[in-house]
Image (tube, rainbow, N blue to C red):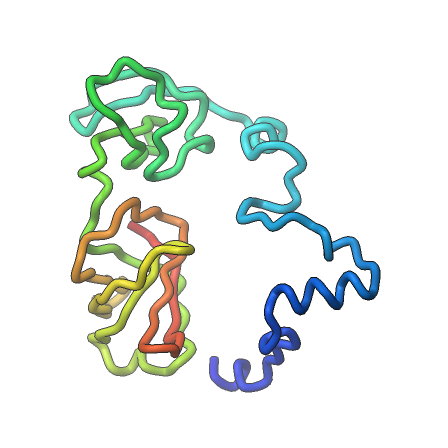
Length: 194
């Protein structure tokens, strides 16, 4: 990985966002006034509208951890770990998506405390730093944009990489990324498997 990284050029890497916008304005580029977004930029309306037109959705049951049916969902693609909206109502306390059972087409919901995990497993791990030779690795990790870094141990268990957090993390979501750091150095990352 280092032989590719040593050739990469970030032409805007030393500039601030306001400086880049100013240059874009000078050249009358449309992007100069474009509103910032943390969402998917190419979707004109909502993610739900986009999905309804692109995939066949299969409604199913909303269940608790014990498998008791609590309601119905419109399709698993509409939900993500930690989501609170769109679960129906009438529960004695706030409920959150804590998982899904794809085989049974079930959406699993639970209390906020059920969202916390102190470990995860990874796939498609990519190491930039070459430090993967030093397992176990003590470093910091970030599981989503704008969450704080948390100390962890990264272990190679053969075909699986396991990450043990020093403090439990909320809404660990399969399919999302985790990134590892030591100080200002990015060591690498991977895709959350479970």
